[in-house]
Image 1: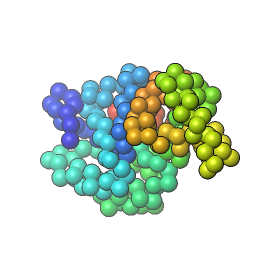
Image 2: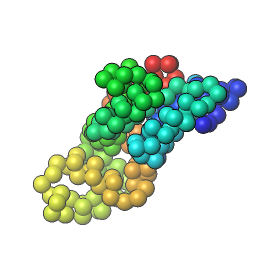
Image 3: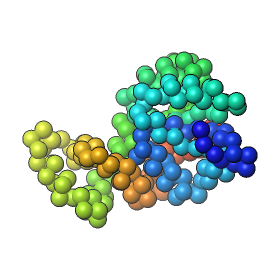
Image 4: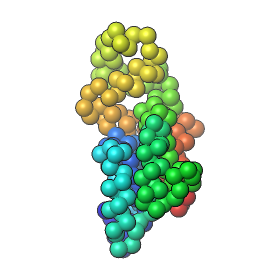
Length: 194
């Protein structure tokens, strides 16, 4: 499923829902000096959490089964539990974190926006030419009464590629003490073996 280490074998596969998650995890690893290749870890975008079962099944067919860890959106916890149990990685009623699967509340964008703060996210949107679009989005009747944080979360998903574009920007802009716990825990589990 990828390459890492001197023998080319991947010891740990980091399963994430989408491309923005992959970019965020890889950016955070680089920022923290975590060498995923040296740790024989590879980040794989599954193209949606519904593909978790098939990815875990494919890993089980490898000659030497890599360890799987992952990052997912909190509302998908029940689906992740079932997939992890079906793959024989642990009981469905067990603690997903102890199995290497970490939930973002409610999703990665929510974690990053909360960690940065709405004002800082708006500054980053301004720096990258998106603030005027966000201001227009805020005026839509369905979103006027929502919190700025909720508006920002939804805005990130209104244009193809926006999440992937901003994920590395948001991660690079985080204060070290504000790195979301699920992301930090995921990297630790991936390279330290949990």
